Amino acid sequence: MKTDSAIIFDMDGVLLDTPKIHREVWRDFASTAPWPAVRHYRALSAGRRSRDVLEELIGDEVPDQQIEDIVASLHRDFLRRCRGSDLVFPAMRRTVEQLRGTIPLALATSAPRHVAREMLDDLFPSFDAVITSDECATGKPDPEVYGRARTALGKGTSPVLAVEDTAIGVQAAVAAGCTAWALALNPVSASAVITAGASVVAVSVAELADLIVSFAERSAQLPLAKYSRA
Image 1 (tube, rainbow, N blue to C red):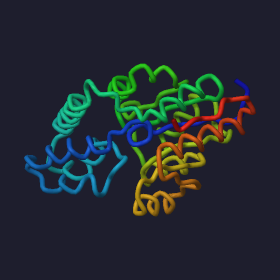
Image 2: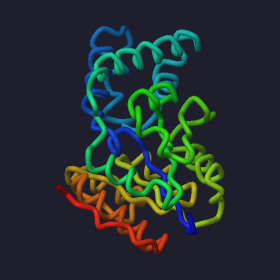
Image 3: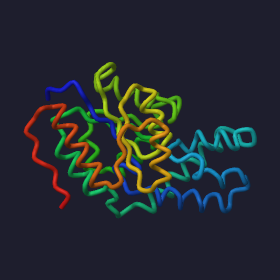
Image 4: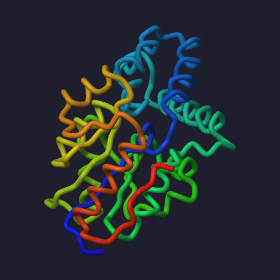
């Protein structure tokens, strides 16, 4: 593996087709929760840790342990809804498998480690470093998770590509000194990630996968096979 670059992936919305499930989990929680403020969470805070948002919205009303219990319940509900389904985007699975061992790869996610491990399953070991929300004092848009990923890869000052799908994630990546590319499936999302600092925006998972492989080919200067959309 001879390259000065590396690639750091967000998980939900980049590797996993899960944003809709996250919205459903929060919608069902908010529909019965006694705190009206939580009903605005997804519209305002996609990409952030649930714990951070709950502390911001209801931290003055709810003790820390209750917030931790709510977060654990949300994660259990999410995993229950996902169990039995392979939600890794096929194009991203092929891309990660193709690049494994040719360029350093990391995962930097707002999910806890046990969720990332279960959701990625056999793809989890493909990453040279995995940094999760339960290992960080602060969540996105704070750059800690990306800074830790860079350090774990030994790329503290080297060029690093971060792949995201939310403005908050892009902000975190850019603040950590990464070049940020983003997946944006609609014009509103595209505008948000560009404003946050994304230098490249892909409008489909297949296009994003092509771009990532091209980046790796240029960075590693290895004879990687051309990625196929099929």
